[in-house]
Image 1 (tube, helix red, strand yellow):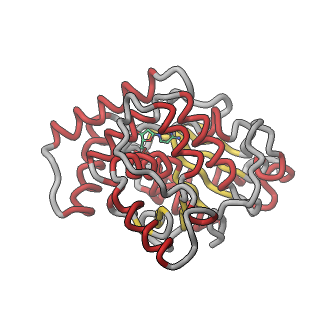
Image 2: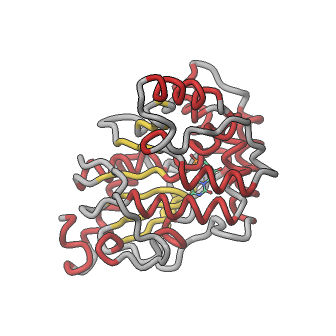
Length: 280
Ligand code: DC
């Protein structure tokens, strides 16, 4: 499966991105609704790449809260003679940034973050920053909270949306997140919005945490955290969580992941050939 490698030059200032947008399928929805699983499976079925935009905000949150690895890494690079430029650019971030108040510095960090996302054949995509694998580290509750906070800032969102568009692969891509059909790829070939009841979303999120760490908070706490993040996602001024115009809404509460993908494929296959012919 092709991976979303960043193109050398981004065409992200305007939302018009004709080559890519006609091949993009977006999946939006609140936390714990099953977006990632559906997006990964759909991408695999279609043989195209997959982009988890939440992972980009999480990677930024990780970089903001954990400056030390960058210093260590940079020292290694400098020792190897590469110098603090070129591929080392973006690592000279020395202080922990506050996800609520350090808006301009977060936006600047977002623009130069040495981020790489690779589709894994199974499980979450591998996420790395300047060669450091942070796939597991970005799934903690600390990072979830910081990502929810820093994603409120319009300046940060603008920078991240640019990065996400630059990650789009010209051979087609399934993109999932909160604003992918409304802001990042408004002209996507096919848009989906997934939803589920809060109780079911909390149970799914709890299972996900248990699978990752072997332990998880009580259900009531997970539900509170989801409620908090839902509030932030739906109320922010820029790129709030909405059902994008033209999106197909799927209630996943009582569907398995395979059933969700089946519904999606039926919609994709019922589209006019000219819009999604390359995905058949
Ligand atoms: O989907 P997730 O839980 O991994 O996302 C982490 C955070 O990133 C979430 O709290 C909201 C933010 N996010 C966003 O604002 N826009 C997106 N397209 C994806 C995620």
